[in-house]
Length: 314
Image (cartoon, rainbow, N blue to C red; front, side, top):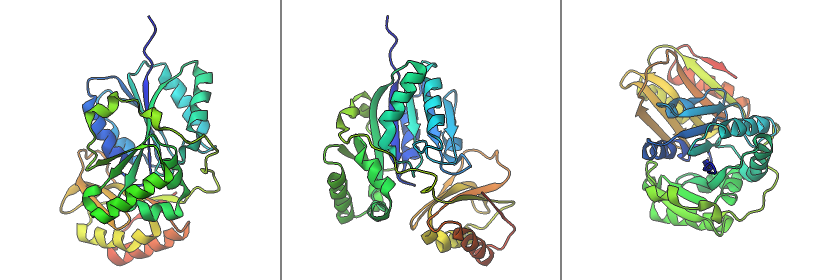
């Protein structure tokens, strides 16, 4: 009897659009199934990998760039080939928020050549931040390409956007991708029947060369500090630098909350009680809008608002 092919889902979406939150909900729906994850972080630290790691789910992390870029593409092909031998029912690829998946079909074909195995591509799902997308897509080609090359667009954070803004985002989605399905999601909730549907039929754009390259790669750095910080002081620091970064995320020890997951996208700052306290140092990852100049901005804002000792690393 022929072996059932692993169902493959590729999750894309610009920085902070809610991919990891939605994937956590999906994993809850599939807790009795054999699942693999390829998780791609743009920075050196695997923050989302820490959040996703649970039970007997097997995960491969590919960090420090986009899996669609020539700098990591071979790593991605190899990871797909290795995962093919493990007889998963489902494999989820969560790409970096900077990832441009225009060459995804080429990568799948390369993985087939290496492994002799062909995945059952169920769909490419693009998560669209209803609050920030209209600004992101003005300046970021990756945000445009992610939507162009998806089979399903999921509008997230619709509870934080008004009706006019939501309507404008929906109109922009349809302008970029005239055929993909469009759904809305609050706090990562997705209809369970989604995983029984053939979403791949919504793919329409021809594969093309990705815009991800070493030359276009934004600056990514991370901060470490010891001890606890008052939430108000950290909040003031994050608001002062928010206009200079695409994204901030990580785990911090706050005086009021203890070990806390921190997410910053645009003007939205989210604090969530972390489930684990294994880490000894607080760590935040920054993806810069202004290149290496962000280092000086971070140091100045931290000294002004917090004042304790910290270290920045590449």
